[in-house]
Length: 468
Ligand SMILES: [Zn+2]
Figure 1: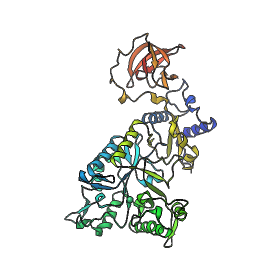
Figure 2 (figure 1 turned 180 degrees about the vertical axis):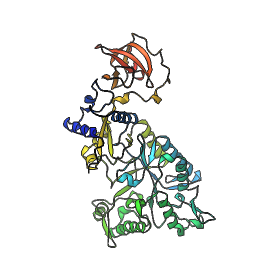
Figure 3 (figure 1 turned 90 degrees about the horizontal axis):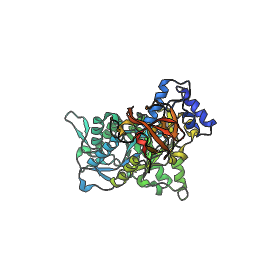
Figure 4 (figure 1 turned 30 degrees about the vertical axis):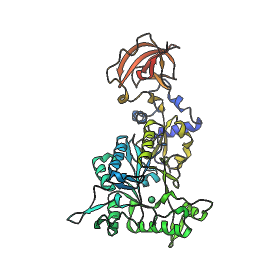
């Protein structure tokens, strides 16, 4: 299905890509007559603004999506362990994600590739395994209403979501019906009798209920009958209690990460892959999560496999590693273009996403492909420019020999991001300072001349004095 063509120039871009065998789009867009990142002639000013915005937010919808994996929680730091996280630590994870422009989405929206988050935001999924009591304790008020206990996982989530309404508000609970958030040793209100109250509360507050088997059995070692009962039984248990989008009974989280081997346990492997019958009902799984493994591929990536979905273990030692990867650029995160109907892929594609780009996969999903030229990103955002608004007249002197410090640096006709692109320069190109500095559009610009005699303007951040 192709959605209505609200963006006719995108169709042109895709056609151009196919005709050009991909790759020449950047040069076609960089002709001097055109403003930065301009789409082909005949498009409206608002489309130009749209492309500029994609550049500004570094939209890339082939990047990875972290699916966070949580287990038990504790208030007591001395009890913290690999699968037991302190509530303070959990709260700081949420804060870190919020501070780094993540936006919480549901598992359903990930599986259905309906990632509807603002432009520039990175989707993140929060999953909670085992339906342990520490994830969701409740209190009962004098009027008979139930509220999440602040010192439990859901208590922390609810208070964080309430204080950060622009963060999204959901989470996926992989439930083991035999546990169902109960522990009679904590108190009576959190014994198994309130299982249904808790499930109903989660559903009413936007959370999802997923399948983690009846008794937390290792499906890698189970027989076909055991598999059918454990997974089919849980699916039916959820179906009896949950209607609407919160019902994720066909989305399985593998206990212990146990996966049936395609050779030694072929019957169970086929049940997992193709579905199975349980008590007269056909059950087909729509997604299977592993234990750990790192961030998940984008659902628009050709590497996406709903039956093999890795997750990010929230144990601090593992999480510190991934949080560092997310910020140092070693991992490219999914960054939204703000429109769930389009898939935006920068041009050029970062090297390690190249193999995951297949325009046919995107076309088959019914979404429109959008490409934009990242060369314009060579002008950093104003907020990252050092020195504030005052030009640094000491940086260079007129007549000085300078070089470019990066690839793809734009030489513009005027000291402005609106200036025509006269050339796109590689790294270490020799230039001579002719004038400046001029402060405009949040950048400091210097007028330079190339060795071929072209004069134009470049942002100071991409210039250095030539080695003498
Ligand atoms: Zn588990």
